[in-house]
Image (cartoon, rainbow, N blue to C red; front, side, top):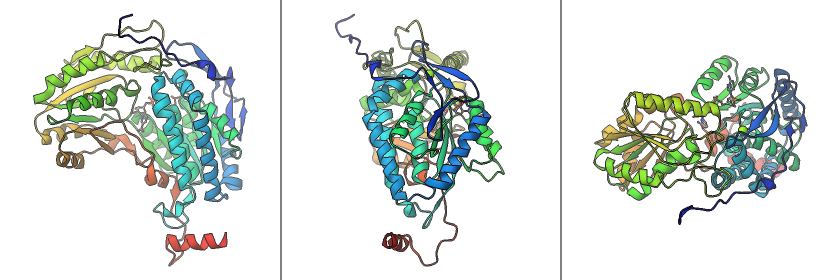
Length: 498
Ligand code: NAP
Ligand code: MG
């Protein structure tokens, strides 16, 4: 170990009290499913963590029935104020059990503990606090007085932010008065199941939230279930398309949060040191398993060499290894399957003529790992410039003028996010205005806040999560708005009769 090396600082797994096996969470109880089980493993060393139930069609049916009963009898009748109290209670329990949730998330997903501890779990609590505040204010959601919940929401989430995606889905759905059946990703079910224990602790009425673990087929059963009123999905564009086809013509409401291939645009007047940190955060945060990752760096030609030199120097200091070590910057790739896809696409990048550079770092013997990688001389037609790698791989392109930067940034089937680095406010506003992306960050990247809407253009999907916009995805306008009643007048009447 060298003079400036870090000693290992592993977070203890001792805080976890995991079961050997987890059932499905249906109607407030953990029950054995009828579809068998599978094992969830730690991607850092491939060791088994727990046996997980594989939800069958019959299990999905039981979960939807429980959600329907809970909606009809309890949750759909409860006042917004009382629903809010449950959400506040859940938010506080997440904070109380934050360390445990962070350790479980890093164990099951492979992400560095400093990210699950400082980003994922605090945002989970923030999302519940934020939507708890909305529960008694739905008259102001922009849909007229007394908007109605859809009823039963079927929600399907990916593996890259398991607990955070759960929060993005559950918090607005519950605040709006829906009940839920949620399907976590096959490789990362653990924190959703610990979260189910939190729901029991919070005394949430049985059936309001049901968690059915399983694989793609379990998700498909949920999407086509006739008694699901609303489908919310986050994942790949391919599965999103399939879901859109399945629900077409059924009257189900649907929102899709899909992939991205974001441009991170660095102008020659940008504060370079900050831009380097922003580029690193943009693509190497969460091993690049981020739908809105800044995976395409567009750098102004005049500063290209300087930016790339500095970037390589910075990347050489990143520490790859044990996700539970507090000093780790780059954790494990979530699955063997995802690692295979990253290897395939990076090999194609080389074949197509881009120049590959990989940070030197020791790769652990077991588990799934990929060292931070940068491709220069990338052309817009290369697959690594067009397709989502969903890994720690940056593709660098250059531009000369703002118009060229905008044209290149928009030259993608996706449109989820983008970044702009410049010292000039007027340039940032002018460029942001022309980018076809749902979120544009200026002199920062990968910032999330529950009050800010997030979602895509084009093949990145439709619908928004976060903020008031995210709430409206879970509400229908009132059946017949009373004539002269403004939201405020109506609200006052309700307060008086309460
Ligand atoms: P995926 O295969 O689409 O999986 C997402 C979820 O859908 C998982 O729970 C998956 O179950 C389930 N699923 C698979 N096939 C299904 C089907 N036919 N019907 C219903 N559900 C099905 O995506 P992934 O590869 O795991 O996740 C990475 C992708 O998600 C990337 O493309 C990324 O950009 C996107 N993503 C987008 C956002 C956003 O907010 N826009 C956020 C995060 C990720 P299994 O896991 O069991 O297969
Ligand atoms: Mg796992």
